[in-house]
Length: 269
Image (cartoon, helix red, strand yellow):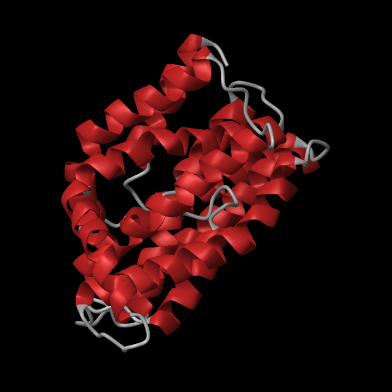
């Protein structure tokens, strides 16, 4: 990437990460359509930029993360006793969902990074289809929201699988996980909170894995992109998380999804 491309992509990542619109999908579309990158490189860069917003999330949720870390010794002592306290169940939820996301998501990430021969028009259409799915899911699941605030282990299995599928550009991680939590009867603000706490360990694992397999070149532009994503993330997270709970972003997903289908349709005509 050039320095200008890094700044643009980092800014997009820092803003869209907190919205249920698939930041990975949007950045992949930009890389494919405007910057002419192959699919494998576009996916690698899009995943890497999440490391920047990971730092933003760590800072924003620092009190909750520190509280959970302090609770860990007690959590270990309570294992097997069936504690129903909120921090105990949340830690169990995060462990289970993260492990399942890694087990399912790692092969999917490798699959995406090894795809170089798919025509860009078809790729954009696939991403557009996933964006449409994301929009439709968000359109219909809020009606299932309830008052649940304590996480459950059986819900962690569902959420771990849902989060893993978000490795595909266009499937919004936050949009799908929040929707799944609402479907399971969680209160809306709790669903958003749990969704972003879930993202921290799995994005960390993805960033480490991406570097181990050489899925992204860790050069100056890549580092600049992550830093810009972090800075924009810190500036926007509070406002955009509030917006995400109030504004109908599912309509934006549908619009962008349909727009992404146009290149393939033009090729077929």
